[in-house]
Length: 389
Image 1 (tube, rainbow, N blue to C red):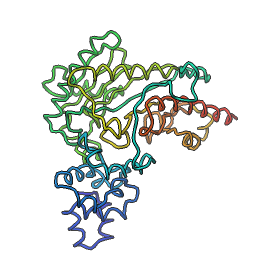
Image 2 (cartoon, rainbow, N blue to C red):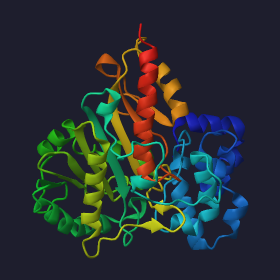
Image 3 (cartoon, helix red, strand yellow):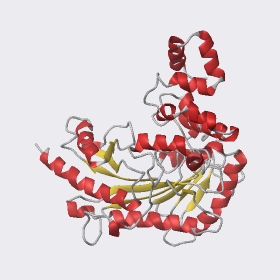
Image 4 (tube, one colour):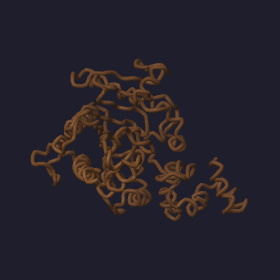
C-alpha cells in the first residue's frame, strides 16, 4: 500500500471509483501516477500501448521491474531489472529509461574497455599519478557491480537461489584467500555456512564500513524484491590488507571493490581488474552481459560498466562557506559528482573534504571513467587555487 502522502495525492486527483481501480490494476495505477510524479523515470517511460502488445509472461516481468517506482513514486529511477535478459527482452521500455537517465540516444550501444592506451588527454606513460598534480596520498576507491548470468537478478531470486549463489562463490573466495596478494577471509550471514558470523561480528563489520547495512531498512530495495530473505545468502569477502572487498547479495549479486591510500589510480584499477579475472576465471562463474548494454546490473543507473571510481579530496577554498555548493557547480560541467565523505546526502568532511567521482557509467569505457577522474581532478584543483583568499 502506498504511503499516506501518495494516498492523499491520489484522492485529490481521482474520485473513489478511480482510486479503487488504481489499487487493483497496476497499469491504471501507473497512468494515474504519471501526471503526479514527472521525475519518476520508470513511471514516465511506461507506455500502456507497448505493454498491451506483450505476452503475459513479459507483462508480469515488466510490472515486477517497475514495482519499486509504483510503491515509491518519489523515486528518481523507479525500476530495477529482475532477470539478466530484461534489458534485451524489454528493450522498448529500458531503451527509453536509459536514454532519459544517461542522456544518450535510445539506440545507444555500450562498449567495455579497460585499456588506457586509446584514451586521449593523458600523460604519455599513461600513469595517472595524482602527485604530479601536487596532491598528497588520498583515499581512492573503485568498485563495480557484477551478476552471474545463470541466476535471476536479486529482485527475482528465491531464498534458495540466494544461498546457492553464495555457495557457488565460495570457490572464488577460497582461491583469493589462497593467493598471497589477497589472502583474508569470507564472512557469511547465512546460518549453516561454514563462514557464518553472529550479529555482534556483523555489527562490527558494518561499523568499520566493510559490510553493507541491513537491507530491510531500504524501502526501494524492499519494494523491488531485492531485500527479500534477509540475511540469507549475504556476506562479504575481505582481503588480508582490507583493501579488496566483495559483497555478496546486495543490490547486485556481487559488488567488487578495491581501495587504497595513495596517488596512482592505475594501481587500484589494475587490482580490481585482476580480482574480476580471478572470479570469472573459475568454471561456472560467468558474469551477465548484454550485447547492446555491456555489464548487466539490477539498477539501470549502473548499467554498462557498473563502475564507480572515487577519491576523497580536500577543497577548503571552494567549501569555505561550509557547503559543497560551489564545488558541485564547478564539478558538474566536468562530468564529476560531489558528495559528502559518507556518501550521498552526507556533510562535507574536515578541511572541506568531499567525495569526487565521474558521473557517467553507461556509454563510457572503464578506462575513460578513471581517466576522466584524473583529468577532472586536475581542472578542479585549478579552480580551488583560484578560489584561494
